[in-house]
Length: 312
Image (cartoon, rainbow, N blue to C red; front, side, top):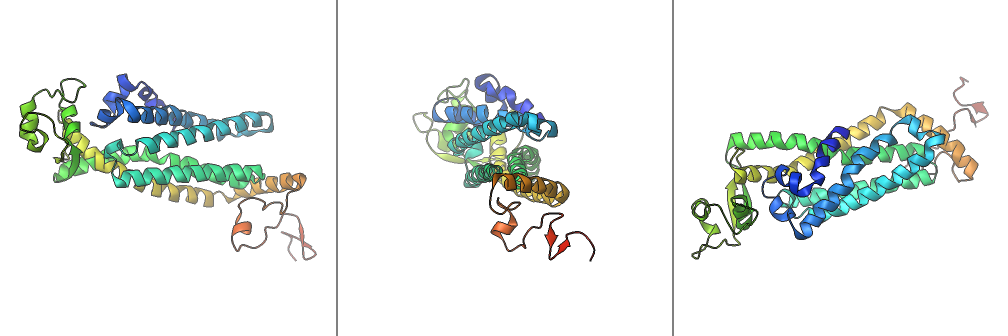
């Protein structure tokens, strides 16, 4: 995640770097207006999260003497994720074509990460440290799904190019922009080329129309229309797939680290007991409070006249 974020920091230079690095066609929407603000808000908020999340998982920076830094950094991450999600929701209608698959997973990820951070906050408010850890790990894994998506997308693009019969629907004005001599979409380098390749895109007067045309998805340098058409259908699919895989992965990780969870729960028990909270050890969103699990027993606490863990 840190490497991915550092490599993407130059994207904050929207005109100089982002315009040349994103999927062909997206800059047609991002260069000005609403979508420029949207992508700017998203990038300027979410990229720092990839850096700030690292100290949150360093044990020495969570020690009592550094707990103030941990709290402030956590609040900063929460605020930035909220702002970044707002930017993502603003731009989702145009990012990589803005298909329903893309928009649905963007909304889903925004909800998942907001709920995840909210649950983490609620549990730490109740001193349920084990659940705070679990929900923060879930949130960070979900946010990290975009990194895996960037691996899946080019692989899928290559497969689509090899098959050869995949198409994406692209507006004529976006195609004219890709074929333009400069950043003015209305000045194609060769109007006849646009008319020959996509007759529906040019009317009798030589003006670019508002039609939509099917473009063959084909990754080939010098063919920005084909590259854009190849990347548009892969984003939503890739993000859905990677979010699913990351969700499974984090639950496997949590299931494989019960000792750490139990250690933190014991600490939570003593903190909740000292704070006078009801149900010490289970004051947060534990399975004892929300499911049908039996009562959690404090290690060393007498159960039925015997000390737990001692053979009868």
